[in-house]
Length: 505
Image (cartoon, rainbow, N blue to C red):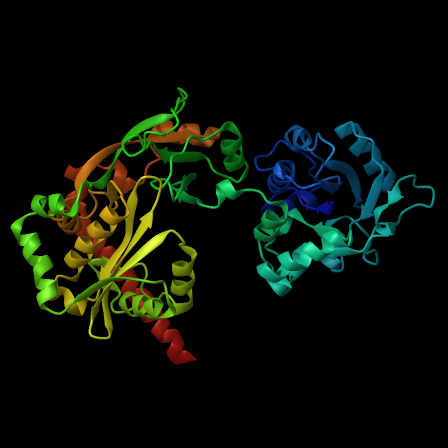
């Protein structure tokens, strides 16, 4: 049994907003985002296959609303009181508002003088006094030991605290946590972030491992960054989880072109259907591809061989990571715009490389130096090229053409029928390279699902797409030089700032 004590001190993910509500004695739960972090934790507990008993201690400023109570409506949860200032009044209010029989209480403590004033206590009161005739049981008096997940996650890191937690659970220790530190870290109080450790302990949210959320104007758009690798058919429960985590819109693609097993998607009338594209190559065999590409491209492949470029499949080793690091940091500008991986550390590159289990790396060596590499990720009936890069100083040796040719060989050996190389439409010179190597612009369907009222408004106003995707080519292409110039200028300013800081040190 996993025993968890959850102290819900503040109503909002924003500390400033929470402090304002407590200072002004506002107890309304109608505001957007109320108990958002607590709802995420409650949902994680409900989905967990583990045996769990969660004791939720609410203050008068965090009384659970209808949405929260629906999540707490099972045997895994028990509602309890976190005393702020007035034990009897707060107990009766909590029972009335939740229609729950309250058995336990804890006491909210504050060490700082300003915090005591915030909660309406006397300056000498770190905690509210509890009358001797108060009928609830004190949770502090339970015989089990307690351990703070917030603090231990900060002090010891993810891997250590997960290992520690397994021991705590076996020993019957009560694990304490605060929703405030689910995603946030505080050096001042030495707490958080606990989401990764809690997720592992409860064995949940694997469907969110590849979800990223970006801000587009004023809305948060969620997408699966592995959407091209696997078929997606979002369930109501999945969309609810995204909504609770702050997403206003979820977008995904339909993969009918490469998977006969794709589950039929039945879009709701509220879903927005748009056209997207990918650079796609259908693979039959190497010779068919070779005959399809033009004479100039074939000569480029031969040129690399004549210039002693050695192409081979290479295991994911530290040596490979070091070579990639040198390529990433060769120049801050590539293809006329800022290169996003410039400045990336060797440690980060090695960690990312070793994380990708289902991938193949093809390398191009000139002597002992890595001149270029290509990464193939193997998905559900499709291979994807997320990375192909070479040293600019060897741009005259057709390294990338040779890497593409070897990638076709590898895909044929692995019986891959489709090879994808990003999209076509946002970079004319790169688009020409793709087309010269046999890739074509392939239309696909993309859906946008509004999850909130803000998301619905954004889709109606056409604010759900990135600007580069929303603009027609006739407007977008003339703007590219200016966009590239801005990108280069920003990168150079960033480098100059770092150099200035280093000189000061």
